[in-house]
Image (spheres, rainbow, N blue to C red):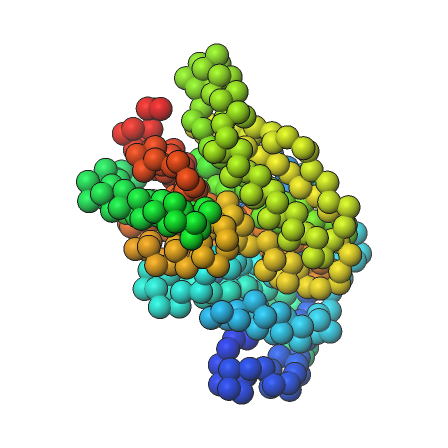
Length: 480
């Protein structure tokens, strides 16, 4: 495999270990090994390269990567390998990650300003929905998992760039680490393999036990709601699929991009796991001193005909249960934004956001940042929202962790990128699945409030599972 061995600089792991931290706490900059060296970063413009071909060819390597694509907006990248790895587990994961990153601020030497690029990723990765270090299924990912890649290939509209990073005391090592365009062409050679959809040979999609467990879980939550212990909780289910062969992840990503061009298409590979999906929900975007977020809650199916679709849209816009759910998310984001920003703007009435098989209530929210705190501090304020957790937050989180029999891991977590210029973008990791060989673990959830019906909510999870299930020719994909 051509990529293997091209970059020989060893990655540095910054994590909560006894080597770097005294009694679980970072004691000083000197306790971190990185401070003696620099992170040298080179940006250059390149010719067009096919990212998904690279994803396909990386399958035969053990390289970590994060693929990101916003098809409708002309922005995408593939980040490969680890130059610096920053990991943390436990309830203080964000604070520990911020502390580790703070020691890197003066260690980066880059020529990126020559290109006048905005929104250039530096750190990439994600946060789990909640700390769950004991989960066997999610053991390949830490609770807070970020890395500076060895190589990033980016597409801004029609322009392509290559970013190379090395951790060293010798800047000349950049030239050794940089992949030549000839090598890139070789890595991106060969088109997609002949299309052959992986088939589901076994699953628990329609398992009666799963449905009965779901009903019991929802009814228990409704009892807590009736007793005024909680106002709303978002509960989810995990669907397990066994395929007849390991699917081509590049083909899955292409299908998702074709079907959901206004979503975030992503794949985060580490060790033997690939977490991938097509999220319609922006958690937060930081750019030009502003922050933007999506309040996305309330769901109805799409209609079979234009007339039916319009009628369902009208019903969604007048449905009290869904409108209340949406308002709770808007109020939460406004309150969160007010802690670090001003001039919060949003439409007074929700907008309909239509996806191929489902439509949502959507309120885009924007504000001007008036704080110099690091991005992860902002992220902690807005994640998780009531759209994926519930309200009150602490009671909803406790209910989820106690009632759901699966670990969410990165599902409903945050996935994306940021840099040290307070720029970054994060998606809420929904409409997603974990791929491990021939095994797929897909997830979907629903907001449970007073008046929710377990049967109706179960059907809603089926709608939300379709972006993943339809990749494998699920037999009910054309049913409404």
